[in-house]
Image 1 (cartoon, rainbow, N blue to C red):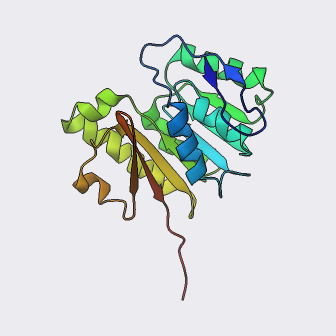
Image 2 (image 1 turned 90 degrees about the vertical axis):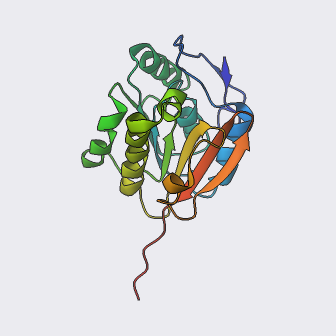
Image 3 (image 1 turned 90 degrees about the horizontal axis):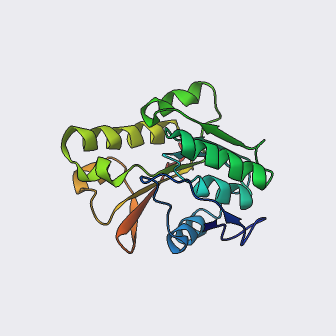
Length: 194
């Protein structure tokens, strides 16, 4: 069982999908993420790519987000996300889409651009190195590009695994370690006109 840590449904327990690859973010790390984005989550549009259990999207709604688009390829995980959203009356604000993550940048054509982007691919996509790793990192860069100015993109990856040449593509990206994983967040700068 997962537990929502704050907001309207604080303490509410939710079911976890019976999927081996699903690796929900630990409560302590989740609290760190939401403390970091507390100034922008209220009324936000959130994209949760590689949603897995859907806990990040559901917690976002509990904390005041306006809507969530959850992207997950696994059918049983999507079914569980929808069931949990229905259980806490968020079905109208949670769009759970069973699509491949690599097609998610095209959502910018039909969905509101995100204020907050959660990106939590399988660790194997980062650990594998080579082309797979380059492809997953490029997907994150592409998704960050469609995010609203002033928005925040958060990546969950194995501890310290992302390299300087990868991180350098997003100036100002920050890292916090939680156990065996790292969270990276990047705020998209506001464009100023002189």
